Length: 234
Image 1 (cartoon, rainbow, N blue to C red):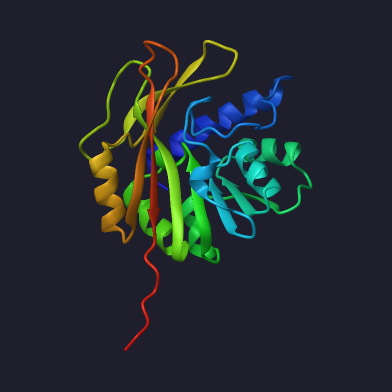
Image 2: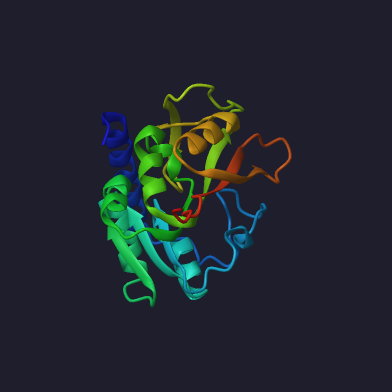
């Protein structure tokens, strides 16, 4: 893990501790969201997940993972933060088809049996794509899909970068004015697509997600890609 990734992971640990210490927590997920509530696309972007082996990368409190488990998927929810993992364990101690794992994403992908579907709600940009994307490709079975949301424009109106470099963004502790800096790879869509293709995936779609609030500049993109199926030998 890179130093900037480690510092960001420590900040997410502070975030998780803050949430564990609060009496309020988010309700169960009754409407799927890719970072911006009440904005399309829906869970339908993942297709029929019943019976699939699914990985939630950067699962946090695992609300999305539990939602898919209720739809019949066999979901492994991975988060590197001890306190985020503790939130998930406290919330879902014995949920059928939901397996909670605390691990670095790349380490887990190197050890796990390849998945049918890997998805991430906002987690991918916190890891160096040159470290993560090769592991994601290897972590998919041939024909398997990767779907993830990534920040495109932050609330200040700062757009994406045209180079594969991390930049500081603000993480606010819920219910407070306390802000921490985290580093993220906020990349232009063309650059994400180039990286995905370079690491052996084919692009299926790129979907814009803009805030439904007027004059709110926050914007994300959802990338859907697939590992090509194996081709039979001669």
